[in-house]
Amino acid sequence: HFFPRNELLLHLKTYNIYYEGQNLQLRHREEEGELIVEGLLNISWGLRRPIRLQMQDDNQRIRPPPSSS
Image (tube, rainbow, N blue to C red; front, side, top):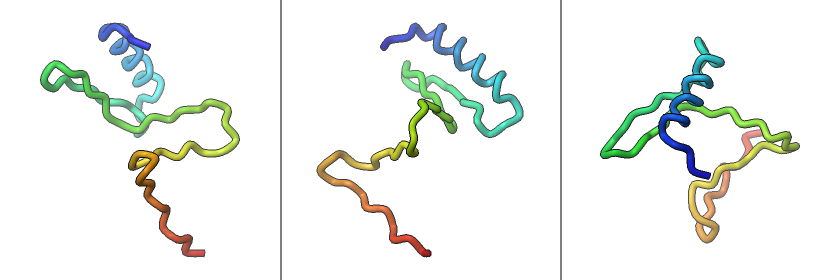
């Protein structure tokens, strides 16, 4: 889904007002005409398990380190 830049920045401003004073605020900057958003993003989708982000493509998965317990 494509958002116009000004609409996205408005949503970022609203998000940052909600999380004011916390480490969840998002920063944005422009680099070579591209909008870059940085920060921690807390997403809740009603899932029963945490979402795991991949570091590599499906052919080269990184295995988690063995548990210390």
